[in-house]
Length: 221
Image (cartoon, rainbow, N blue to C red):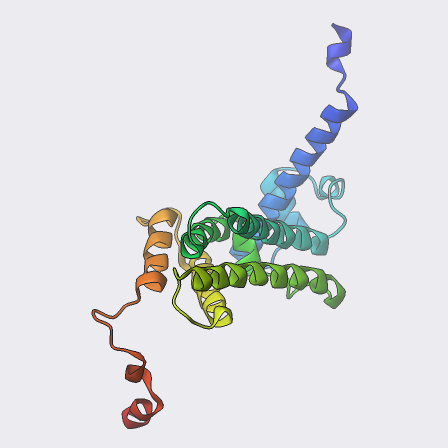
C-alpha cells in the first residue's frame, strides 16, 4: 500500500506534460485576448492560480511559450493537411480539400489556433521565426497539392492553386478574429457556409470571366 503513494517516473512525466500544456494553453488564451506584449508571465500565473516561479518549472521564457503555442497550432494544421493528402481513397481532390478546410476552421477557433492567427510568430526573434515560417510553407504546399489533385481529377476547375490556397486560408483564418464562441453561429455552420462560397461561388448565374475584364473595370472607374 505504501508504494501506491509514490508516483512512477512515467506518471511524474505525464503529470509534468499535462501541467506544461496547461501553462501553454492559458498563455495562448491570454495572448489572443490581450496581445503578446501586453501579457506578462505574472498574468499567466494569476490565471493559473500559481506563482510566477512555478511557471519557470515548465518554460524558460515568454518567447518560448509563444513559440510553442504557434508551433502547436501549425502542427495541428499540418497534421490535418497530411491526413487529407493521404486519404487517397477518400473521395475526389475537392472532397478531401473540403474536409481539410472544415478541420482548418475548427483548429483556428481553438486556443492554439487562435493564438497562431491573432498573434503569430512576428513578436519572436528572427532565428526563431524561420523554423515556424518553414512549417507554414510546408502546410501551404500541402494545400496546393490537394488543389492540384482536384484539378487533375476534374473535381476543381482549372485555376491558380497558389491564389486559391491563399484566398481560402485567408478567409478561414479570419474566422478566428470575428467568431464569438458564445454567439449563435457554430464553427460547423460558419465553415460550411464559407466553404460553400468557394465551391459554388456567389453569382446567381454564370457570368463568365468577361464580367471582370480590364475593359469593364476601366469603365467602372
